Length: 180
Image (cartoon, rainbow, N blue to C red; front, top):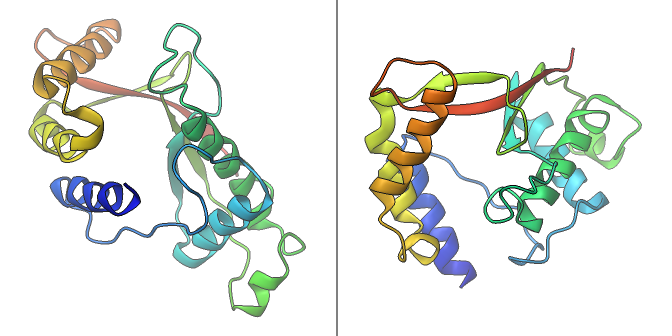
């Protein structure tokens, strides 16, 4: 299953125009925890790629949506990434071995959380929805039981409606946190 899931992720990334996907070793599906090793790996990636913005899963459970955004792996990624953004990646004393690898501290300016409660930023994705649907379909092991197009359009339509966008628009919602 891990090889299949990696292939699906690469196909999903390609569907939205991403050319590079890195996987963090040592974290089997379904067993992820926001421990120090995951935080170190995410901090290393932040220091290597030096992003201004990081998009991650929300570390907060949504009781009204126990499936999807409340999966333990998603929550663990959100928590570990939050800790990697602050304080780990910007702190030269966190994971000093990263300095030995030439990975200098880096300050990420924003974290965008997906799937969390009370999002405060909406992005109109109507013009990109076909790529979103293709990416979701690429995760066949996770979506084969769904009518993916209907599911995506319904979910994004509800987000757009709740945000007051014009009828027929589709949107994604995020919680945006400034970190600098």
